[in-house]
Length: 276
Length: 267
Image (cartoon, rainbow over all chains, first blue to last red; front, side, top):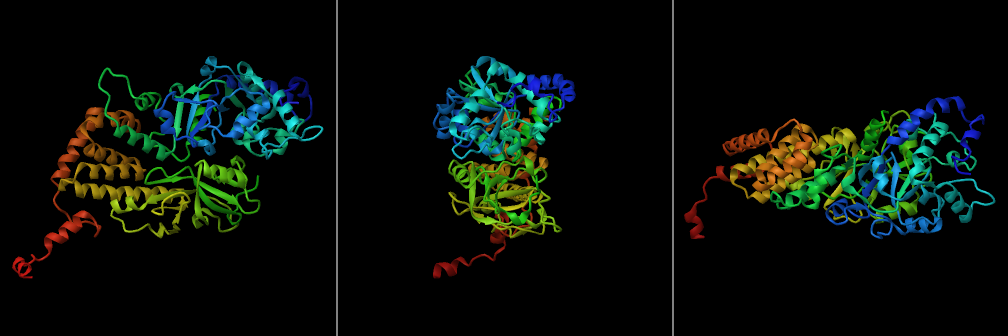
């Protein structure tokens, strides 16, 4: 039973605080409507390559140079189309050296789906996300759990708001705390990594990096981009900008000189956008 | 979540790859008790860390998410509580290539900085000339700035000597790589503009300098470049603080007794 199933009925369980849920839900709905999607880029493919080469987007997993076989394996098991991956409001430096944030508005141009956890971790061969499933913790049961937990792209923000209000003692705990350990399968009880309670959003098409709302990179990446610009001949007036110029013409980096804490900085910006 | 205890952790790498000649990055640590790995984003909130097993760690290194040290490093003493061994300050990795040190007029990487020992280790999949060490975040930032200041000094010595533009630009690229403080980065951008092809100055200003110094209009930046260029061009050959700098070497040459040409001819 996914974490959001029968939530209204289950709120009467002692583990939940129904009064607190109803008090916080409007605020959580507002937060959910505005929280940005984050993708961290730049490892399997260097970020300057993504900037310089068409289609200048966060690709779907059909791009073998960008995603690993484990991603495609997980999608095949769950019947998910090749997807571009995002986390709701969270950034992790394991995935690269540049964090890009996209506003809710960009979802309108996509088909996709969401899950209230990292699906790759759930069906990973080494069971990175732990759950208690019946009759056994086998691949079949995990896939079924993943399928039951899928949310249509146009409804995930509503589900996110209700999960946030029900399981998290405060909104900020989505970033700095842990959900209440009271879901039947123990997703919130057995795991300590935040990928187990962060919403994963999937677009079935690539997402243009030029449509970002914000971005932040580490220092070497900013230096590398500057040197690449140095190496280019300036574009004559009236000519179309080079791909690098077009990228740099967009929103400027949250830390113009870069920072090793680019993910922390990005999450700070995201919380500011939702008044946290 | 329990605290991070230094005796149960070792530094095994750095986050990302050293894609430029020097820089800082978050450490990758290994927990000795269970062999799990993590990017050490924080020491204040251990629950926020994600831990990965050996297989993932190897895959991350393979895909260049992490760069492994050839030998693990201990934590800097300044980051560890003397009472219970907890990590109390954020450690940071610093890497530097020999070519940058040479350009800065430095003969070697420092064994210690601000009373912190620095152990410089080579990195897997990188040339030996790049070495990384771990210090407290504050010391690492200050050391990078110090290298930036040395590079500034080298530029200021080389500029009046009509050094070729490419060499000057390389020094300013290194300086922008090293300099972290706002004041030094401003100085670096001015010198970079002096060394750039003129047509590139405006676009660097528009996309980079302006983002770091939004209060400075283009005309003011141009004026500052011009003023700096004029001052540097008129700088007298002053004694240098570093015996190995270009100016020092040139001064050494000019103050040597003249070589007796006749004797050379006779030889």
